[in-house]
Image (cartoon, rainbow, N blue to C red):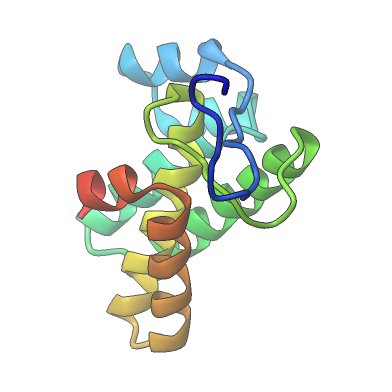
Length: 137
């Protein structure tokens, strides 16, 4: 039996390819809007915009940024073999932008009373990565 073999028969974890430029720019203090403009496919840039807007009380803006990051992440996951379900491990750093955007979307949805969307996103986050759900809560 191979080490790390999935004994439950579910899909293997999806690991997005590394895209270090947006991550490094955000870590160095670059404006997230500039990073998103330069790297619009970066879920991380959109997640950071969502977090910043939420912290400033701009919940609708946060929702829009989060939804953009979420959809960019779904596109990337599908391009990398994801079939609509299965693990997206938080431990793999390139997955964190998508997971952060998903969390931000759930948070913003809850804040505006969109409870079905909140519950769907919160469940999707926990199913994709229990570690992300625990870390981001």
